[in-house]
Image 1 (spheres, rainbow, N blue to C red):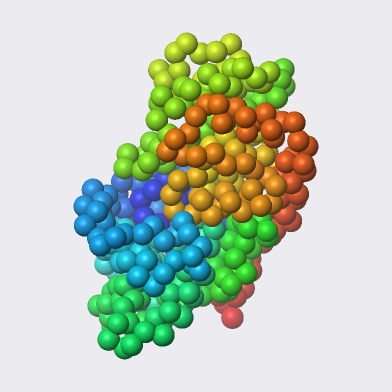
Image 2 (cartoon, rainbow, N blue to C red):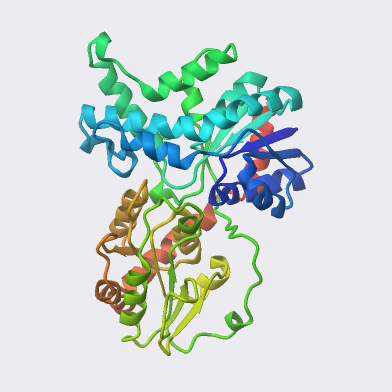
Length: 410
């Protein structure tokens, strides 16, 4: 069987594919990973056969268009029932700008490649709807591989419900219209399944999963954190409870994303120096000066090697970062800001495995107090361990690859 994976050019989104892609390879299937030129070096480093297609994302152009949108709303950071029709409509218009920016530079070359290579299955990133188009253009089955919460399904269901309640002249569907227009260019008709894929692969534990996800395929999260050598100091047990401070790799990759400032990071490290803990801060070396005695500053360390030695993780609530903590059974202090991070962080708080702090006005004192509270209350550790057990209970990538291969062949 031939399997085509495709994502827009973001390394974290590529890493999300790697375990399942290797599972197909080791099962004897042919695999290709297709992305844009900016991801060529990162793609090559995975060891998987890749192709670069189209042109790169114009992030600055996207920001200009989004900035001109009328009352834009980042809808995917909100529960859909909390939004009015106008907020959802403007939010979907904003999302269409993103779809165009991420997909228009890729879709034509991807369709051409798919029609030539003839994959049996296309697995696509939730922002890379070009994969859904390519699958239909070559007659392949397709699966959407989620990165984070399935915020798409409940928002889409709510939007379509409200859409049908509007007079015909007011029924605007920016997402459906873009997909319909794009499919039509290749002689294809729009179907709602193109928004979701035939199957949806979800790597979050059961308590974080959306019950409405169509074609749900649970899969165990397997961390891929880039190329790195595990440092020797990790073989020594920490002398005090170890705290991981990580702001995520994608914050450095895309400069337009909101991020915690260097001043705020230094304030957090200084505040944690008041506790009897060991801090490992994944920050540029010149951010913290002087470095407190209880702190180790490293530009990068693989989280799947670090977190099993930690008592608490402090982060911006990025998907990969928090998923590593879930796998390791580590309670979290989260500063959510954009996309699905507020919803995911809120759910983890409800489940007793995390505390949240403000993002824009984050202070060292509130982070220190949250860390102190988690260390003093064993219920946080108990909840984090329960979620770890849920992660480990899901089918492995190898099992999911076998399942999808069987279903695709039927």
